[in-house]
Every structure is written in C-alpha cells, then in structure tokens.
Length: 314
Length: 283
Image 1 (spheres, rainbow over the protein chains, first blue to last red):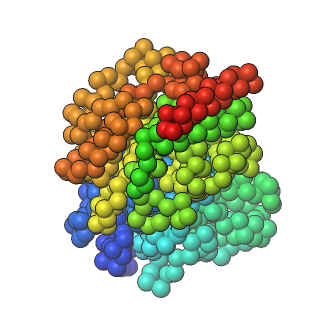
Image 2: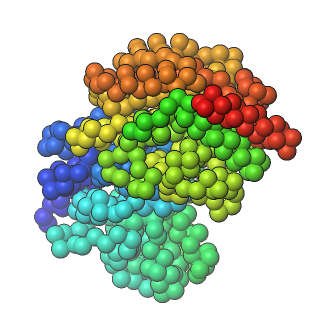
C-alpha cells in the first residue's frame, strides 16, 4: 500500500497566499508575530513589501486589516484561532463584521490538535464565536488540497471570511480533480442508515468510522461540511430525510459549533436524532496531538459508537 | 481646501452645535457633551482641512476620517449635513428606527462616513490601516482620527499608536478631544491617562497641543501636522465638554443625556444668541 500524503492545512494556506500574491498586487497579508507558525511567513518571503507584522497585538491586527480593506486591498490577517477569534472577537465583530469588510481571517492552530501547548492555546470555541457574527463566512477545510482552494475562494468573496486551519499534518482526502464549491457540502460516501456530517480533520475520521460501520452492515453516508456558515441546509435536509439519523463530528466544543448549527437547523426543518461528536464541556490539556484527539473522543471509534446510538434513536 | 474666515467657521460650528442639540433632543438620547466639545475640530476638518467631495463621498483619493470616539456621532452628522453630504433635515431622524443616522456611525448607511465605529479604541487601529494602505498605494491623502481622552484607557489605542510610529505613518493625524470628562467622572478620578502628549511622544509621535475651540490654533496645528517628518502626529486639543451650552459645560452628567423640552429651548436660545453675536461681529 502506498503512503497516504499528509499536509497541515496551515501549509496549504501559506502556499495559496504565495500563489495568489504572485497574481494579485492588491493582496496584503498581516500577522501578529506568528508568521512562522501560521505560514504567512511563506508570503513574507515571496512578497515582503506586502507583508506586515503588527507584533503581538491581535486587536490592532484586526483594526489595521479593516482599514486596509476600506482602501481596496484584499487582506488576510493571521494569528492562532485562540487569539484571532477569541482575544480579538469584538474587533472582528465591530470593525470587520458590522461594516461587512472583506477581511479574511486565517486562523491556524485551531482545536485540540495543537497538542503539547495545552489548553491555553487549544481553541475549541472559535466556530461558536464566529458563527454569531452576521454575514461572516466560516470555512473549516478537511485537508491540504481543500484548504488551498478554500483560500482562493475566500479571497474572491466580497465579505468577511473566517478560515480555520490546523497545526497537525492530516491525510489527503482530495486529489487534483477536486473542485471546491463554497457553501456546498461534499458527499464522500453513500449510505442510507445514518449520516456522518463532519468538518475539518474529523472528515477523515468520519470516513474511517464509515468503514468500521460497514463491517457491521451499517451503511453510513459521509458529508464533508467545509463551509460551516452559510450552512448547506439542503444537503442536511436530504440526509435527514433519507437516513433518518445524523452524527456530527468536529474538533471543537459541542457547544455552539458545527454540531450545534446542524441541530439548530434540523430541529426547525426536519427533526431527526442529531448526536454530536466534539470536545465535551471541558478544557484541553498538553500531550501529543494524535493522543489528545483520542483522549477527547475525536476519533473514528467514537463517531461509530455515536452512529449506532443515533440509529437506535431513529 | 475651502477658504473660510474665522467668523464663518465659528458660525458653522454654532450651527453644528444646534444640529447636535436638535438631533439629541428629538432622539431623546445620545451624547451631547462630547459632541459639543468636538464641534470646532470637526467643523475645521470637513470645511477646511480635508479633501472631500459631498457630491462624491466615495471619491477614491479623498482624505479619510475615523470617528474613533463614535458616540459623538451627532456632531459628525451635523458637520456632514452642513457640508452638504445630506440634508440638514435628516438630523431630526437621529437614532430613530429606519434612520440612516445610527446611534454610532455606520459607513454602510451614512454618506460621508468612512468607518463604522462606536466601540472605543477600535477606530484608531482602522485609521492606521487606512494610512498604511495609502502609503502602500503611493497616495498622498491623509487619514484623520478623533479620539476621546477617556478612550485612551483602551489598550488597543496604544497598540495602534506603537504600530503607526513603527511604520512611519506621517499621513496619519490623530486628534485627542481632551475634555477631561468621562461617564464616571473626570479622567484623572477614573484612571488618569495624563500626561497624554508625553505618552504619544514616547510612542514616537509628533506632538502638538492646542485649545480645541480656537480656530487660529486649530488651523496652525493642522498646517504643522501635515508637514511630513516621518512620524504620525497627535494633536492634543484641550476642550470643554458641553462647549457652547452653558449649563452643559464641564458636567460629566451631560455625557450621554438628552435635554428635556425646557433645556432644549434654553440651549437653542443660547446658541442662536451666539450665532447672532458672531454675525454682528462679522458685519
């Protein structure tokens, strides 16, 4: 068996910025002293005159990005998810969201898979926070190739976008022929017994879970929700109608995130059992990324278990 | 740049103050104190200093203005109305349902408003971004921001100040409306930002200190401020909160309170008397 290629979505982000920078002279990238980690450093190397480091000042980062956007630039502003969505939430809301400025927030190091840095840096609240801002588009790509295309799509959008990237290298799901379509969930596996709706690095776990379930004769549909807002309600309704039970999977708190968005949507349109896999109402902790994902129940085995429960509730 | 005499500017500023009182009275809420202290500076900016076109509010190379102390929107609206961005009759719709004149400025709704503000400390960062953008694009336009003195308690102001100086943004001019009052009392009582000028200077800014209600000093300050030198400029403008309406002057209570009917009549009478006196002086 050939080795599956792995890339961290943050690396794909950096590469996309470099490639776009070569084409678009109006592209500006900002960072807050994390350029090496967020991978905006790749852009800094390629286009130093259009890269600005504001230093360790995330609130100012968002304001400066907003100001640049009013001047007609395409602006990407980067930091860790914890500081971009957490610390600077109100700046994102008031200086970017309220005037609907086309600032693209490239938030890396999201979720438990930050690993060893521990709870202070493991942001499992960013989707919940960003989701409450009217007009904010939220993209959480599943792998490197999808992340690359998502960055390109975000740049073209006339409005604010929150892009969520991870630190950990994750297996490629998509190949060269993949075509990213903003706001449209991607069906990765057909199935009529239950639907696993996953986002980010949990998409790969969802595919493994579907294999586990198939061994038991359970046919799980797998949907990749790279776009969390606007939510692809049509795909969800169809999945609810055809499979009768939904399991969501995300590397984020079960409170307020993707699973919550799915539950909110379906409870009002087509009520079926919706069980959420995510970080329960707890903080993270230090440890190797792969181990921490398992410790917090963010793996295929846990998704499969929830799928069995969901089917029983049907 | 328009050429106006000092008397003409005083007259406009007086009408702007009347517009503030009009708006806040009809809204039954809003922030008259800081609006009145900022009226002269805003008048000078929009009637003399800034390259703007009321017929083309989004003119690409216009100078930009960010009202970082967004709660004094009534003064900005009155200035924009008198400058011709929209009708003066609109001022009575301030804060009303469906009005383009929101409680705090919205760039999406009001012609002439370059940035939505209201949450203190954020506007100055945006102004820094605008000035940086103009510099990257090789443009010569200026970016102006008006801050409150209480607003300087927000840490973001100093994040922005540090970055602006580090990038040598000499087409950025911040004005501090130093009326010495905030909601809970004098700025020293609450949490002293003094010495304001020295703080900005220590952050690498060029400092100019003036009387916020003296058009000769205002004119001189902006002339100096646009002189380049590789540094952003701060104009610390010593002002009187509630300026022009005697019973509102120097009273923190008038930060965010609307006048009642008698107070409204008294304020209007006072400002109209002042207007007549200016006209007499000019005649």
